Length: 362
Image (cartoon, rainbow, N blue to C red; front, side, top):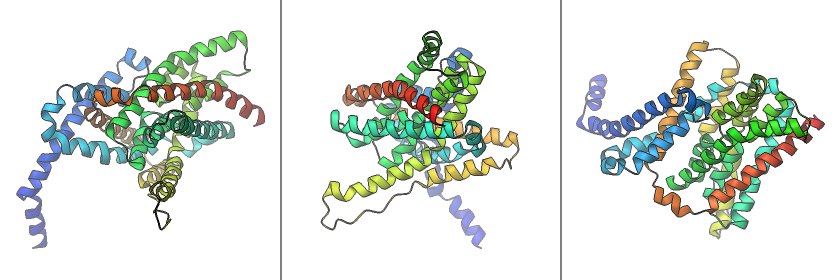
């Protein structure tokens, strides 16, 4: 009898109505994702460092400012689910791209370099963004996260913690696209200059660690590293993966900081600290990476899970693009670009010095 009632509930008009609300938006985000993944596999596009995630938000923004407004009503629920729920699931599954053994391969040099670069870049973003430019904390934190950790994925993962508007997220992702793309071509050129003038003594592997610890996106790191050599590319990717793994503790610390700052910002009479919002998806991300380190699953299954993860993250990026209006990005003004440019200069110059001195000490 219970089974029959469950079947009736599942097949009730309310159930089909809810499903009908979800499908249009999910199908739209999925279609954009399919095109983005196809385009991302085109050789010349891949060589430029434009991965599926970057292309998904670009295509989403194009449609979001042309066709989407006329079909927004039936698609809104599914697009919202893609932007929120699928994003969190995608961040969790991102752990299957990593293993703790990768940390051992690069050693303490990569870990310490990543930690110092991440911390200094984010703190610089907070100081320049808030004190110098007077920007809002949400935009500053998003740009800081994207620049210091892993580009668009970090921006998207930070959004639920800071509870930012879609327009602010899009502004932050745009800075990642701009300066990450510049980095793809700039770093190989910088390597050749350093080889000629010998500013800093480094090997191809050492320069790969420099690339992995300072360039925004994983795809951009791959493109820049491989342009130098396979050795540089491998070191760059491993270092970048370690940097990606720092996303989870970063989000927990950021969540704690935001929770502690609420009473003072609202001048609460009780002066009680608000409860810390633990981003469980970030914690599960580390758990999945740890599980993946034991190599318990067949390689083919892990590959399928990584493909599923790319699809989920790309759908989230597509949904973000659909809900982003160019007018909102223009309204943000020049300050976000100036902040991101300062962080880019710091990553290039300060990152080189950090890599140099850490390499000397360790």
